[in-house]
Length: 217
Image (cartoon, rainbow, N blue to C red; front, side):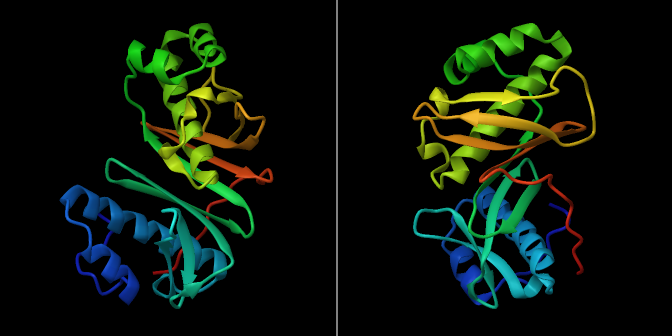
């Protein structure tokens, strides 16, 4: 959040108009943070200054990449949580979603409500110190997959089944995951843990290994 400029001059005219419609301060802060990440990701992907790039909500609420105020052929997904934002870009057309979660305790009621039986069994099979990571990872994967369907949490994610690999041991690298919907659909992707956080990316068709984009100010 400290990276976000104080003023609004870095936002495009359309972005400033959208920002002006937000009334709740936390929502305004999160929105600005998400736009900053989107500009960095889209600008880096296209090789242009971030000020020329951006992401605006489509009619269904999903973010769409823009360049100089016009739609760009770039798939975009944004997530923000607790003063930090993640934006992921890819070559369009692709169904793309990402999520960023703070590693925090998840109650037994949360696990029973939102995790499918195979996911609960995975948690029970892990050392106690890895269960919180796994619960947050599974939830983040569900959110990323729902975004890839351009529905977010309007979609009931309780019928999904997430299968992440490499959960038992810590590692600072991207590891594969797969999510299957109850209707037979599938989203594949990657997950990564950082101190205090977990990141997920899902796409259809299957995405390549994520790489960090370099952004010029």
